[in-house]
Length: 161
Image (cartoon, rainbow, N blue to C red):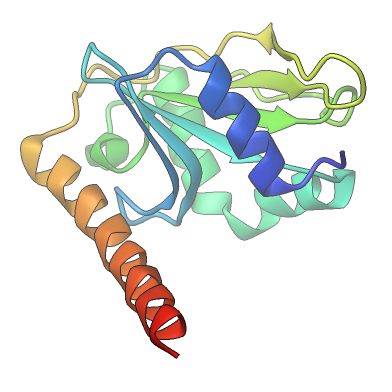
C-alpha cells in the first residue's frame, strides 16, 4: 500500500483517541486541515499530511503566514491569530520523510509496508489554550455535511437508473 493522503488519514483515524476526527476541513480559515482531531479537552489538533519531501518543503513556502503565527505562539508571543490555528500542530508522513521539524510542530510517522503502525516521533507542543467554540464546531460539521449529502444524492440517482 502506498502512502497517499487518504491512507495516512485512515491510519491516523484508527490511531487517534479523539472525540471527533474530520478529514479535509476548514475550521479557522487559514487553509484546509488535512486531518483535524477534536480532543475531549476541547483542544484541536491539526495533522498536516505530507507524502513527499517536495510536498513537505512546499508547505513552508505556501503557508508562510500560518507557520509564522505558530512559531510566534511557540515562542510566547501573544497574538490575536491564535484563534486561527490549532492547539497542537503535527506533520504526518511516511517514515524518514521529514527532517528538521520546527519547534512548534510535532511529527507522526505512518508505516504502511509491514505493520501499518503509527509512531509519534516528536510530540507537538501546546501552542495556546483557547478551546474550540460551539460555533466553530458547527461550522466544521456544516462544511462536511454538504459534500456528504451531495454524494448521497448522486448515489441515489445512480441506483434509480
